[in-house]
Structures are given as structure tokens and as C-alpha cells.
Length: 170
Image (cartoon, rainbow, N blue to C red; front, side, top):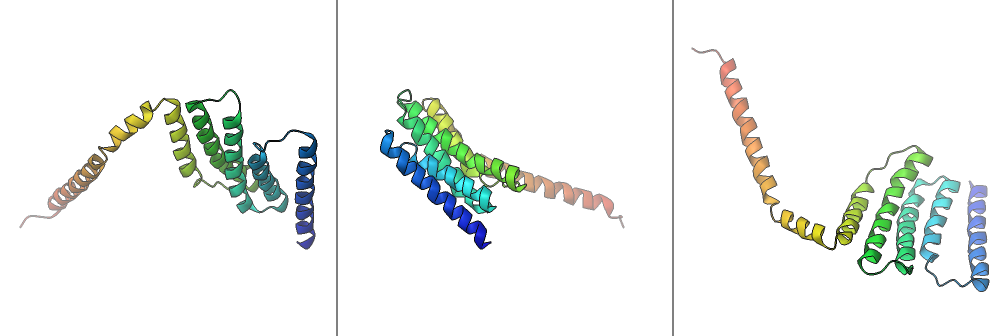
């Protein structure tokens, strides 16, 4: 195990050294820095076989991709924010994919924050129409409680009727 840690640490130092060396000769304004850190965590996870490192790897890669999109010249206004949120969501979903591919485990919990980020990204893309719709629909959430309450009473009523029919008279 100690040998494996040395290899991983060595690879990390080589990667950092490479980034710092290249940044001296190539204009590097930092927009890919977070993405590189995220990809580093993913590589580290795969080499060391530590599944937990995919979590910061996926999240940081998603954020880093979002930063790269937001800093691009063609993404302006709402598109910039939407692309950031959708990239962030993709980072969460990548955790599900990578754990299944490389560790043969299905981790579904990242779908919840990823789904929320994706919904926000799509809502921004629709110029707020989806946000307004969700806000309107959100006012009627108590209807769900009413339906569940009636459903519970209906089931109890049906069970009571069925119970009376099964009992003999007399």
C-alpha cells in the first residue's frame, strides 16, 4: 500500500509541475484551473482505487467546466449562468457514471443535487418562464397533503368495509 501511495503522490507532483511549467510559456488565465484539479481527483481515484475521491473530482470538474464556459467569449447573459449550472449538474451526474464504470457500484444520491442544478440551469435557459411556472406550482404543494390524507382515509374506509363483510352475522 505504501508503494501505491508513493506512486500517486509522485503523479500528483508531476502533474502540478507540468501545469506550472506550461503556464510560464502559455497564457493561462486560470479558467481551467478548477477543471484540472477536478480531473486530478478523478485520476487519483482511479489510480488509488478510492471511490470517495470521485466526489470532489466530479463536483470540481463540473464547476471547472462551468467556469470555462462562463469565461468563453460566446457565452453571454443568461446563457453563461445556464451553462454553468448545467455543467455543475453534469459534474454530479459524472459521479454516478464513474462509480458504476470503474467501481461497479451504482451511487444514485448524486442525482438529487445534480437534478436540482440541472433544473435551475434549464430554468435559466427558458428566461425565467420555468422558474415562474415552478413558483406557481409551488403554491399548490398543500394539495399533495390533501390527496395523501384522503387516500389514507379511503384505504381505511375500504379496509373497514371489507372487515365487516368477513365477519359472520349473529
